[in-house]
Image (tube, rainbow, N blue to C red):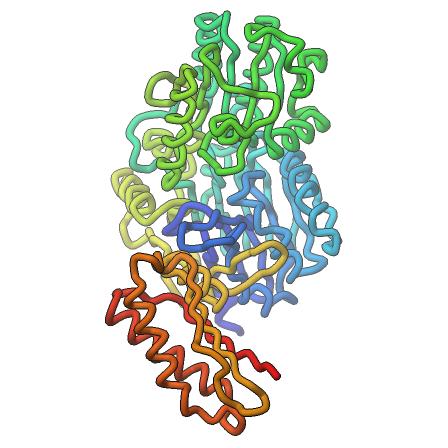
Length: 556
């Protein structure tokens, strides 16, 4: 018998030790089930990159084993890489909630070569995928259609929460199905993997309805002002509350920002957003209404460079000019790493006279992730034998594992995963048993490249050190120089302040090539020699390492 039949394997390609890029694979014998397929946003050292996706080489090499992909919810860090994964895994079925399917279909419209019709599932539905029986369990999160997964495997029941929180008064009136969780717990859960994002935060997260109360009060307090609200486009429940408040106070609403327009249109089409269409106004008709009659709902809560709010703050948004009668609400929290960009937008808005409120000043945002007491409730209800924290940086995973130990779980039954880890579980033992490729790939327009490739290295060097172009002109009759070498720089040094150094550089090049045999010598070797000499020279003189591009021009 194949040893693999004795255990269930769980491999992590993203989402652990980091926030974003969530994707893992459940494997038993010769069958694989993929859970989520998320992306991450590029960091500052990735100039020109649009999206960061996981390296799924292992899955591509084992494509014949893959039985399906299940999606927990429609956030980008869980579905953003799906088109690229499907590109390498054609024909693999996808299962997700109604809103998640609609958002996935929108993404696939931009990847027309991919033929995939995602399957919409409802809460409580059970789908058999290979040897896995997957039950989709309703959970509350900051987007509609979020699901946990109760997966019956040949070894036992595996429960994955996806992103969740315990909100007893959700906007859609349909709270997390704790009764079903208790039933699953009574039958026995072998393994739990759970959202660890807020494992360091004590207490309970605030209900989404609390934000609605705060927003309502702000509308009353600023009845004579134009109200601008920046929030996550995917937070359909937040948007629903804003629409309800606008209708209550007879305000027209203007949607701005591509993602805001797309998601609201999609959610309305499938019934996830309900509102009177008469309150929606096109931005081109904004001049027909007084400030107190308007609410502008926009993207840009994270200070994104080309978002609607950033363009307003910079005075670059056609039709909308920020002034003293604008009241701007940041109905969001800062994603780690975005603080500087958000502060820049806030300062620009203040400089134009706007009034601003954000999370630290009022309860205008709540997290979609469970706090410590909610995590304790989950563990107590499910009573898992083994636990693997996921969805968070290492400190979040450690904090979550500490919670499990406080509740009485044996430390030997807890494994904190790292990227690329494969964990094997059977009825009696859990252990790390190997690794899978777990790097990243970079999406640049339509091109997918390896991280650390030549293009990326060149971009980083250009951004940090600049470029120096050396041109040498020779005669194809005499094979000698027709003039002194020229040097052009961009982003390297200000030539007027460094004339002496640049003259020395020209003399260095001239002395090196004046006796060069251009007719018989390999030009690539000549260029490499020039490049090396200048690199040594510039570092010695200026402690700089520009990209050096030698060009040899042949003339008659």
